[in-house]
Image (tube, rainbow, N blue to C red; front, side, top):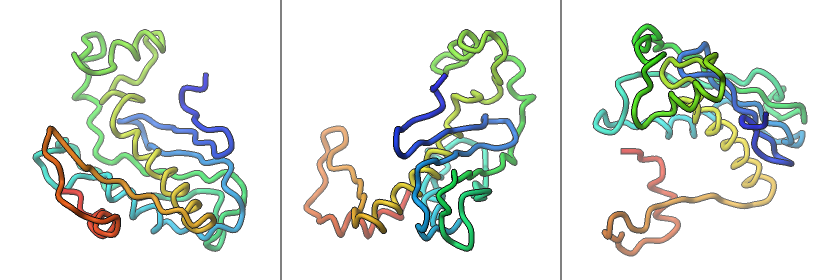
Amino acid sequence: MRGNIIGERFIVLSFGESHGRCVGAVVDGCPAGLALREEDVQRELDLRRPSSPLISTERREEDVVEILSGVFEGYTTGAPICMLTWNRDVKGEDYAEIRYKPRPGHADYYAHVKYEGFNDYRGGGRFSGRITAGFVMAGAVAKKLLRDVLGIRIIGYSLEIGGVRAGEFTLEDAERNRYEND
């Protein structure tokens, strides 16, 4: 089952569940010699967390990345890079009712069918937004590889939302403001 693996040359394996011990990713295919520190990954992971309670869940996770393998003395080794963050704000008992009563708009029923009832249903398990933390970690490595090795910068922005179009701005404006996540 390749549902947890994406990529061909730069391969990302996502692991963990919302209320399990941790979530993370293993990156295979990153060449040796790329300067990489936990701070590089943490910077991107911090952007994943909304700073406004109006657009976020009540759950509060620190999301501190740990690089367990594939990096030695600040450089990638060419071996798979394993990164994770521990789940601390875990309240699995809050989800006992949904074990047999799936929530509308969630993947509870699909997960139950796919995994024949053996799925970790707490907080959506593998289908929780928490799982995106591993993809952000892997994306941080990919972004650094593209920038440092190939000179490619990745910049994203919204030009129009709901018919409201942004005023004139440059890519430099978008890059300068990208660390604001309100």
